[in-house]
Length: 125
Image 1: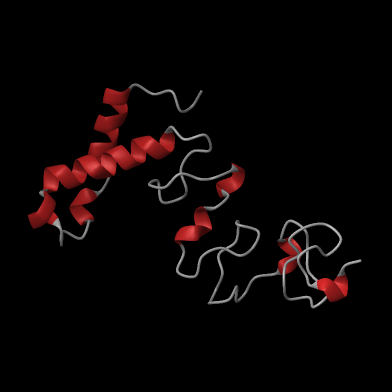
Image 2: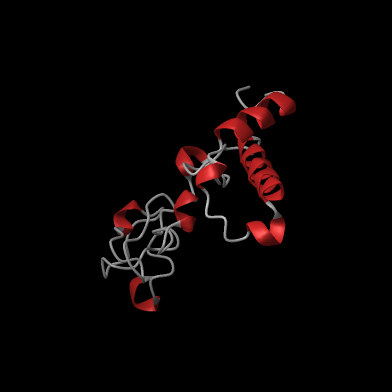
């Protein structure tokens, strides 16, 4: 599979291409540059071996196909579909139509299950 790469070869590739020269070195005095490089290398190798590969940042593992869950690291987290980044607090900019069970009748809240489950007793039978 594409995730089966020789550790030594992969680690060397990461160290030469990780761009750690451009990384904020605020913590270098605490950890040391070599130790920071090793931490970054371990993170990258870890996500490359995960079931769904890495998010676009090449550091964090995706939680499903198509970068599912990668938006969790965005400033306001994910929309209820876990694929789209929210633009502000309280799911600002999210469309509940894209959530797994669609919208509640209020057209704002995402349903938590079929037949408007989780939308409140006024909407369920």
